[in-house]
Image 1: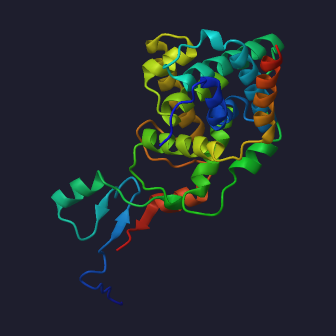
Image 2: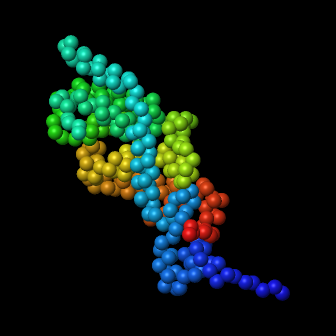
Image 3: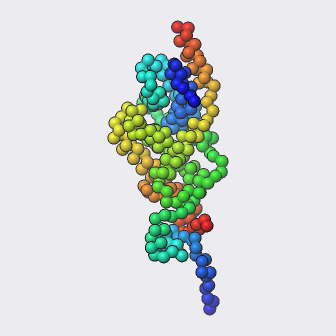
Amino acid sequence: MGSFFMEPNAGDGVWFHDETEAGKKMSDTPSQRSRSARVPQGGPGGTPRGRNSTDEIDANLKRTYQQALDLDVPDRFRSLLAALKEKERQQ
Amino acid sequence: MTTAAADPREDLIGHVPALRAFALSLTRNIADADDLVQDTLVKAWDKFGSFTAGTDLRAWLFTILRNQFFSTKRKTKRQVEDPDQVHEQSLFDSPAHDGRLAYGEFQRAFDKLSPEHREVLILVGANGYSCEEAAHVMGVAVGTVKSRTARARARLLDLLGVQSGGDFLPTTEGATAAVMSRSSIRAA
C-alpha cells in the first residue's frame, strides 16, 4: 500500500469553494480561515469573486454607458443644429 | 479651459454623445436612439425659452428625451426592441479581455429589463446622478427612484442568477462556474 506525501507548503494558495470546504485555505489557522472565508479571491473571467453584486452591476452599467458615449457623433446632428439655427435666422 | 457659450444652444452639440448613450439605454437600438435624439434636439430648440440659464442643461435635455420616448411608447403601444439584437451585438461585443463572458451575460440581462428599469439604472448607476437628480429628470418622487432602482437591480440579479450581495457569477456559464466553485488556485 503506497503512502501519500505532500510538500510542507504544497497547499499554499489553494482554495476550496464548495459547500463543505468554503473559504478554507490549507495553510491557514482556524482564525485565518474564518477571515479568509470573507475575502475570497479570483473568479471566472477575471471577475474578482466577493465583489459586491451592486458594484459589479454599476461597473457594467458604466461600461455600457461609456461605450455608447465613445461612439462617433454622426454628422446629421451637426447638420440638424445648423439647419435649426439658419431657420431661426431667416425668421 | 472651456466656457459656456453665450447662447446655451451652442452647447447642444456637446451633449449629443450623452443623449445618444441615454437614448440607446432606452431603445437598445442605435437607429431608434438617433431618431429619438433628433426629436429631442428639435424640441429643445423650439422650447429653449423654458430652459433656465445656469441650470443643468444635460438634465433638461434628458427630461425631454425620456418624455419623448415614453410618450411615443405609450402611443404606439408596442415594445421598442431589437429582436435580432443585431445592433446590440455590433455595439457591445468587445475585444477579448478578462470578464468578457460576464459582461456579455450582463448585456443580455440588461436588454431584458423594462425601459423604466434601464432608465433608472443608467441615470443613477452609470451617469452618476443622485436619486434627487434622477427624480428631477424622470419627474417622479425621490422615493420612487430609490424603490425603482432597488427593483431594477434585483431584477437584473435575478436574470443573472445572482443573489443580492453575492458574487457576480452568471449561471449560463454553468460548466465554468461549477469548476470554479469547487476549487480555484489563488495567484501567488
